Structures are given as structure tokens and as C-alpha cells.
Amino acid sequence: MVDKHFVSDFWPQVFEPLRQMGSRLAEFAAPASEASSDEGTYRIALELPGVAEEDIDISVDGGVMTVKGEKKTEREEKTDTWYFSERRYGAFSRSFRLPDDADPENISAALKDGVLTVTLPRKASKSPSSKKVPINRG
Image 1: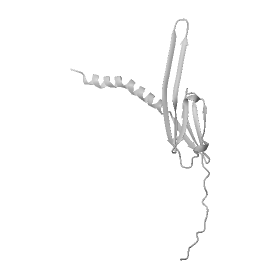
Image 2 (image 1 turned 30 degrees about the vertical axis):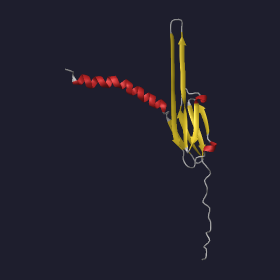
Image 3 (image 1 turned 180 degrees about the horizontal axis):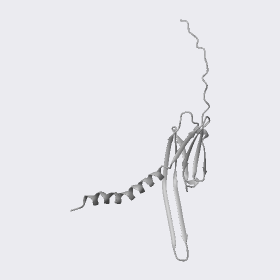
Image 4 (image 1 turned 90 degrees about the horizontal axis):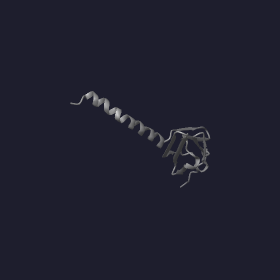
């Protein structure tokens, strides 16, 4: 007979490392981001540590901006008595619906210290103009 406490304690121990790994993969597949705005611009910052500029693609289509790319890291250490090598690869993608007054024609991006900052200026607001409406006499 199997002890019920053994089963209830055993399965979480088996699956918890898998859950943690899945959570880490999901975090990388959709990098953390932060959005802000002021009177003239919208800014979106994404955390992309270890991602090279040439491995990032930013596109705008149908009012949606998509940032995608691939992280490739390699680490190698050697001494007289041991050798260590580690490689990590993974693709990521994140999409953002742009506000109606964002100007995707003048989008810019900068990568610094593992943070990609995308800046979109706001379109000049059209001030409501007054217009006299003539009345047609029928």
C-alpha cells in the first residue's frame, strides 16, 4: 500500500523543477517591458540582456509593433586541469498595439546596457476648426 503523504509530497517535488523551467522559458520568450508616454512621445523599453543589435528585428504593420529576435550566448572557460563550455539559444517575440496618435513613420530605437528603448512620436493633433455651415434655401 502506498502512503498518501508520500504521493502528495513526491509529485510536487518531481514537477516543481519542470514548472520553474517552463516559467523561465516563458519569461524569455516574451521579454519584460515597460511603456510610458508624455505629451510628445510614446516609449517602450524591453529587457534584452545579452542580445546583440543585429539579432533584433522591429517592424510595424497594421498598427501593431513587433519586436523579435534571438539570443545567442556562449561561455567558455579553460584552465590546465578543467574545461567548461555553455551555450544558450532562444527566440523571443513581443507585440504591442500602437495608439491611434502614434507616428510609426518616425519610429526610432536604441539599445543600451541590455535595454531596447523604442520611441514613437505622437502625431500632431488636429485642432478642431470652426466652420460656418450655410443653410440651403429650398
